[in-house]
Amino acid sequence: MENEIKILGRWIYNEFHIDISAYKSNQMNRRLTNLMARCGASSVGDYIRMLERNPKLKQKLADFITINVSEFFRNKELFDDLRDKIDKLLLKEKPRIKIWSAACSNGAEPYSITIIMDRLTPGVRHSILATDIDATILEAAKRGEYTANDVKSVDNLTLQRYFKKVGDKYILNEDIKNRVKFKKHDLILDPYESGFDLIVCRNVVIYFTQEVKDAIYKKFYDSLNDGGLLFVGATETIYNYKDFGFGKASTFIYQKKKLC
Ligand SMILES: C[S@@+](CC[C@H](N)C(=O)[O-])C[C@H]1O[C@@H](n2cnc3c(N)ncnc32)[C@H](O)[C@@H]1O
Image (cartoon, rainbow, N blue to C red; front, side, top):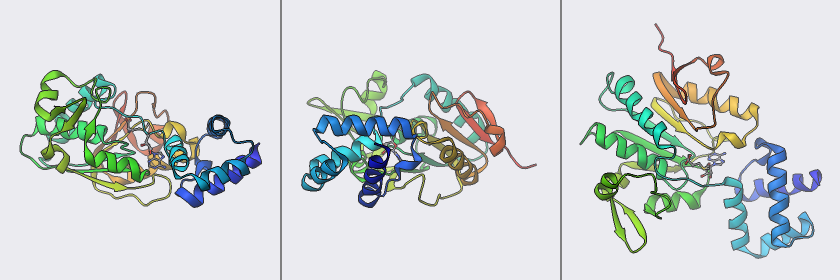
């Protein structure tokens, strides 16, 4: 089966430019095998033939690999902590900051940060970049339309102020939408921009091998300004953070040490 998965891996790379060898192999192989079985494919060759005939199945595979689940203020208490750290550690130093939400999925994460910034510094235009490997989910992010489940952690005041309810959809306010620049970017293969004061990267590196994770953390470090913050997911403690030159600002927020 391992060889078969390698063949599928090459096909996936050629089609989507996604390198599945960077993902934890046991987990990825198990998930792909289950997916193929659910589609009724008898072999990888059979599955590839089905994919080539059926664009919907192809999109399903891309969505499946990228796992783009997200929601506004995911782990609310961690976003409260982030707001405090942005206020105390970043805005005390400079009035406008540069932010990157990496692997942003449907936009709920960069928009949550934009709402935090709007509250902390009304009227100030910060630079907010949001990227993901998946072009389809980026289009959804730009539309800014969400379900009740996506906004379940948003308090009523924020919901009233920043969203309009139309039918069963929650439509994000245009002003917040216009403050975020979306761009396709692969954390493994593409070069990183620099000069960020805050990088948010949550719930994606858990799928990567330790080697790939370490390479990403090193690149995040290089992309941050001195004193800049890295906010990670609720299960993503970086045990070797000192090796990269980070200090700890709190449990899930790391700070690039300032050069003296
Ligand atoms: C589970 S979602 C996390 C979304 C958001 N950060 C959050 O925590 O709510 C993972 C996202 O990572 C993206 N992704 C997967 N592999 C990636 C890669 N190599 N480079 C950039 N984004 C990637 C997926 O497309 C997906 O949107």
